[in-house]
Length: 152
Image (cartoon, rainbow, N blue to C red; front, side, top):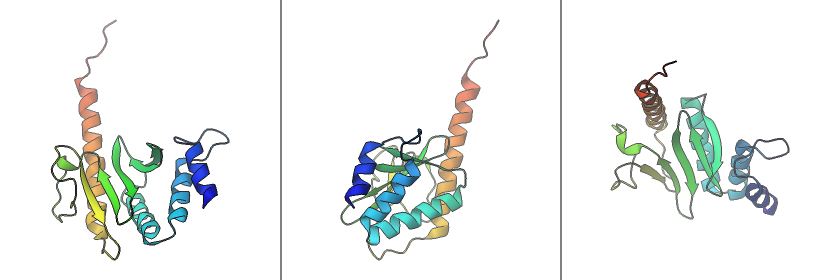
């Protein structure tokens, strides 16, 4: 357990030669937790990858797993009593299955708090991930179209 923590602290963005990759740091975090939180984080990680096979795993802010595609999709924070998936642009996403149950008061982020023994609506979570990716892609495309072409 000590090795995993030390390794995580050494590399925050990871994958230069000799450094631990973000995916390896997330693996270490899951192993380090060794309880329902690790199992839950591993499960949501799998669902995120199934929903978006092109997802990029990152390690930010001194130890937070982050999943991105054309911008941040969500983070996976672990606390004593909850695994929290925070969607960077969650307030702009449709949530017909009402997965968001935390951070509802803000104008930007929304979160899903998963407690021990909670059932995860896997299809609804995958749909939310895909919607977050689509939103990121549309924002990126809109940003490109607003740039004026350079004249010679």
